[in-house]
Length: 122
Image (cartoon, rainbow, N blue to C red):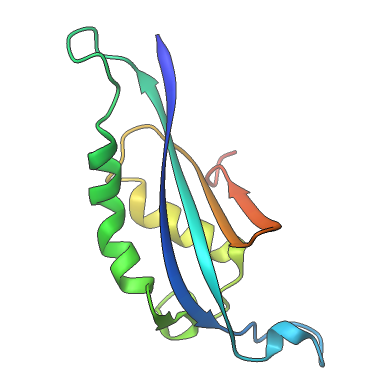
């Protein structure tokens, strides 16, 4: 049996987007309550009854959350242009070796706006 597991983490951060057209509201410093969903897929172990402990996903994400929470994202190396798309790919690069079966990352920056990323080969 193959399953898909998703664990969410949240963080608060400020940013601005340096490459938007002149006058665009995102060129001004602003903040978001970001919500990130990390999705993994894999087979269920017949002995444990699970593919991966949700705590393992949380542990893999904890250092990244710490690096982002209540920070100015433009100052984080690799996030100089911190769009949701770039943030999702940034998270992927840092989680791909920590989480077996990493299948997708969703970055939600507002209640109505989110980015789904399935990795560089999707």
